[in-house]
Image (cartoon, rainbow, N blue to C red):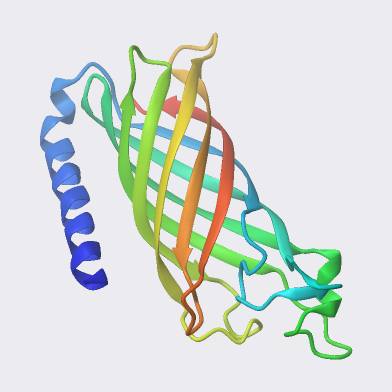
Length: 208
């Protein structure tokens, strides 16, 4: 069932990409590209390895926050609809609980959790050209699989979100800021998922 659902989702977005390629010359905009910073905040104590650290009788997260960079491309389909593609690199930093983790090896520092997400999606502007709703699906690659003793190098990812585009004084340049909830399946033989709140702040411009 999971494979069927993924196939349907990917098929839908590839159809959107094909539509965009045919329609982009008929809309009042051009391809838009943006690059910016990413900040992430994990939502569960078992993020990453799926193994919790113990603090007293409570589970404590080994990874709490992440930082990174992302490249985004928006392809116009309609005046308020864009097909999107994005890629980036995010490193989730170990917390003070990492040295007490059940996975920690004596004398060996638990590494950061480094990921490379590649996604496609759609961006719909709501009531104008400033606020938008955004949804993406794709694959997230684990950059340091060997160091983390992971089973899989990539996992299915989906991410809905909201954002705001602010035009700058220079024509066809913008600030694009947004928030999303991103969910990636485990890189281990486990049922848990890696979920985090993602915040992006990017400089964008139209390519004429």
